[in-house]
Length: 127
Image 1 (spheres, one colour):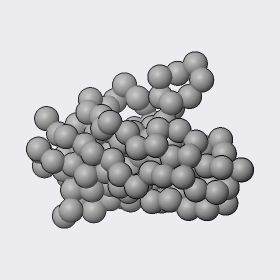
Image 2 (cartoon, one colour; image 1 turned 60 degrees about the vertical axis):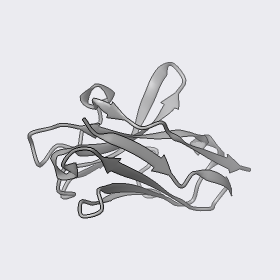
Image 3 (cartoon, rainbow, N blue to C red; image 1 turned 90 degrees about the vertical axis):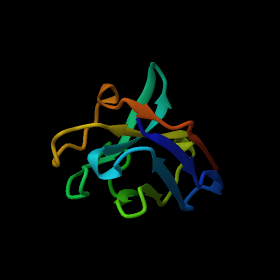
């Protein structure tokens, strides 16, 4: 299995930026599609962004488009979430997750696609 550790969260004012990182260990990182999720009312977690194994395909929640960018560095076994123009409603614990998918094109938006999860990093946006 793969172990995931998030970092980079913190307190930021509205309009500011943060870059979250997720370091993976244990298995071949390039075999996993990667995603970021956060808790939401009525759901355990809601989708934020996802990236395919090679990085060629990305998907974003509507709330993230234009403000948030997901990227990955397979040589460093890491995935990143660059968040700009942050809003108070972005306040949440952000979790990265790994999807053991056979497809190099899959960047799943479904929580159930992901078998491995990190412990999360807190992002707090003040108004």
